[in-house]
Length: 290
Image 1 (cartoon, helix red, strand yellow):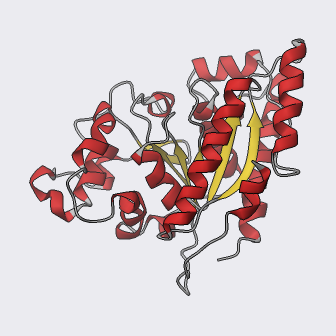
Image 2: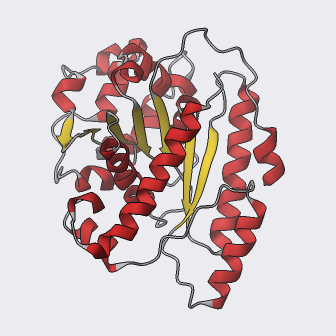
């Protein structure tokens, strides 16, 4: 996998002027690894640092939307905005703009998900325009990368068309994982998909910024061994400090709050971990080669 990581280089020329914003995807084809929790708290960590942040919930399960308080999304949501951006699908367009769908919590904005996203691939199957770049063109048409410093994307646990769109539209990827053999196999498949995106030649493959061990229990010997094995196979220095099964993280999630909403000393370490993830993103951005 490390060799794949090092081979992923841009194969197309980039435009001379880049927008200021960057798209960061939290992605793993394996479910239950904490992508949503990581994306949510990292978005607020970036906001705490003074950045303007937009979250996209591209998982039909809508867990990120639930954390923002969207118990039920409105009549229209992100799926409809994406379809609206495709000229060939004019008969399916709805009368909603981004401002009609946008949800704000604290200083972070969200474009919520809905169950219709599960049919996205079927809906766009017949269009002649490149289906892999629908999300990228959506960002461009709505000038979102000049409106926001960072767009954080919570991805579905698949490697289907939605995820291909996310990879084509993203500049960076954060990969939460649980240290076990299933995650190791999933990471292998992810790097193969990333190389496929690079081989398409229609978009630059995103940089992998960090591998995030999550829900780790170091009392289990096999888990320790799996974590060591996976970390050794990743590019050096990309695996961050493990996130353990902390009661504080469960508490914040249950209350639909970020870890920064709590002032107790027992939240300081978690806050520091998410601040570190935000710094990984911002430090990378400072040296990003267009």
